[in-house]
Length: 89
Ligand SMILES: [Zn+2]
Ligand SMILES: [Zn+2]
Image (cartoon, rainbow, N blue to C red; front, side, top):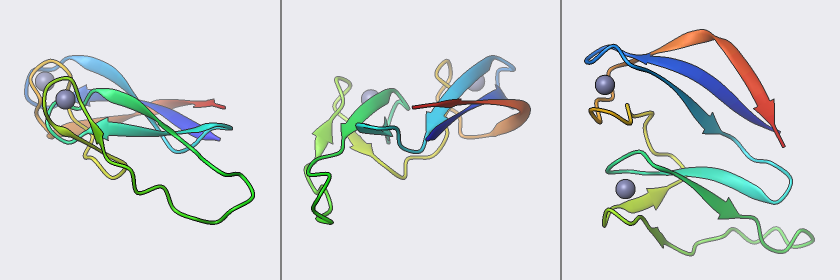
């Protein structure tokens, strides 16, 4: 199960939610450049093989599973996690 956490940007003060973790069929990955969320398919439920396929974002950046939480408005990584969180599958 994945998590959705609400963040507030320390730079521009906008609020946004950030999905992370993995659901039933996908993991949530993010662009390392712009922070856009991308679904990362989980292949081969029976095999333990890691997915090494690289995804590209429409901005030209590389989609990473370990991308930093980034403000979608100003792209700052200076963000504060809120207390609210939800879960997704
Ligand atoms: Zn911001
Ligand atoms: Zn991007």
